[in-house]
Image (cartoon, rainbow, N blue to C red; front, side, top):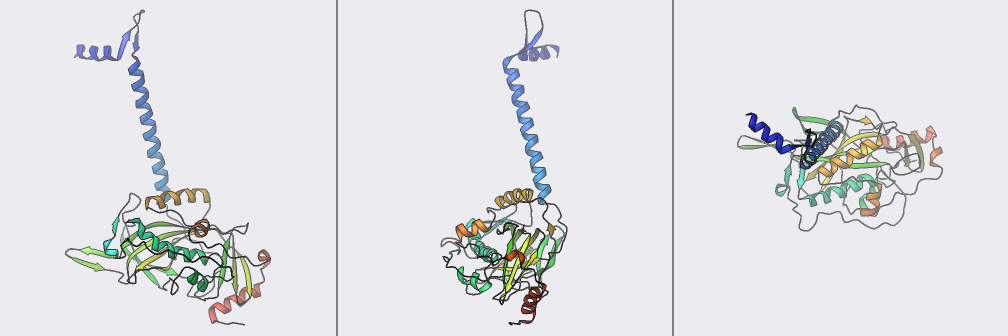
Length: 342
């Protein structure tokens, strides 16, 4: 045993002229490489821990300021400017039958999965563009026409069933107001569009139990979860020549989009919970990018809407910052709730 240890020691070191043992050159190099690998591995695990902490954080519910008191929660726009019509349809060679899609989990979530082929998301993006457009001064009618829809890509549902770690859960959802002429802009303090969407995974609405398949949302074969980061500090509302500007709290919400039998994606509503205030926009933006990438996607915002869908934000009303007359607010609410058109 002693001779074996001596052989190993002689292989790793040598004696100098003074009789002291010194490490051989390759021993020093190997040690440095091992140290570098340990540091790199530790940093990788630490970064993954930080990202997963953000992804799995439980947001706290908050209430957005100034919303129309109605069962429907629309938003829309008005204004004119000629814009190029979109082509957000699924590619010719992309399967439109959801049975031909592959949904696989990621390390982020077992329930919310990534769709392959990724070209399927092109159809979803067209509906996302509609949702973004009505946040940027387009009325429902304008957004529908500009994007080539035959009708508004939204369905009013009271609840949507989603998977959770504890099983299936029927969650309440809310809407934007459906009035075709209602318009709104969600803006930061500089008057720039301030809403970003990002994919959070998708799931099939069926469960295999034994030798049979249970369908728990027959209208939509696949549903996708999309995060909405509304970093706006102001909302400008306009309806029937009435204009009102409200302050707003930057808020993160979660939207649900379903793939129907007509091979199109529709907005099913916004989950009433969870919602949370955005306190660190930079951290949320970084997390948004990472998670969207894991789902073969990327965030959708005003820049994307202009570049890929050719829709710029509509021109804001003059002096919009000072449009705070409460009577104007009430006139808009009356128009939304009662259909009044003074």
